[in-house]
Image 1 (cartoon, rainbow, N blue to C red):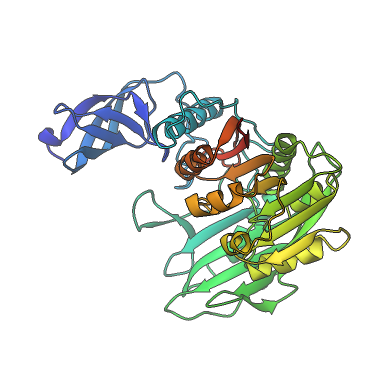
Image 2 (tube, one colour):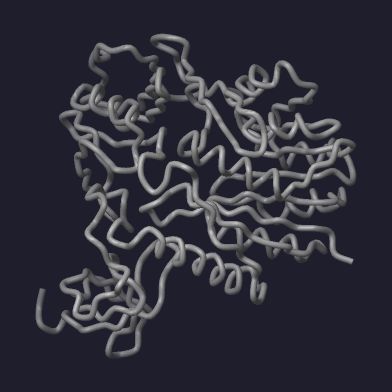
Length: 411
């Protein structure tokens, strides 16, 4: 650090990655983690590019009224120094700015964010954690390869915390673990590193080794049963196996179901298509409301879970890439469509293929704001009107936000 690198910066903006934005003395934009719009800070400029710079926070000279004592010190909780209600305001601001800038939609209709029952702490029942050389569980430090060991995180459910304690220090040689925990069941996915694997620690849990292809079940059933209790439909449970995606926890998942069902407005004579359907989080409750539901999912393990979870319904389940499925002409015309694509988004090709079937109503779920903005631009190009975007804060204390966009065919 030199005096030339230290500058006083007024923070006026906010990035979708959760950093404050100001300007250096020469006018370049500078990103400063750990700050809040409205603050004046002293920062050490560490990265200088032609059009932007990055700086480390040194001191807060004028503090925001929304700054609080951090709720958590783990590297994953990058926004825990901000009052949770103001986190929501910043996340809503992020959606508006990204949809305007990337999606080219002026004044997008963005609701106030919805929060789960378990919020802002104790909501996370799944986590991916990395491992130190001696097997300590940790998270990667922000924008670095350093692994910071953790023994707790305020976002974890009590059951997930117990699983972390059981696994900590026992998987030296592995690269990463994926942990899933309910009140009564634990599942561990082990991703081997270059050092080989020691014997699994004792404990009442199921685990699988993940290398290439499908996970190899080494102990137990290879799955957990996640209880989901939405307010809009009766409770249900979902089998989630090693290798299958699931949301951050049962409480956030239940809230997301409520928002999706409200947006879909499914009627008893509707046909519904659920794309990127996973293990059936939306498919199962949709099947209780619609005439018929079609589920499409590319993951074999998630499809197998969906078949088990939907055994008592009339849902038609396809194991297929969603874009290929649409190219083959399987999508019924005029359906209500729900899609929850991966972080990268659905993409223009998929959306144009889907729009060609003239869905009467589209519910587009997204976990990345920039990808959502790109996809919304494709929907508008295809003739669809954006009715609303409902943010769902399934990731309190992090920069992530889930968003549910509702679209209808324009006139």
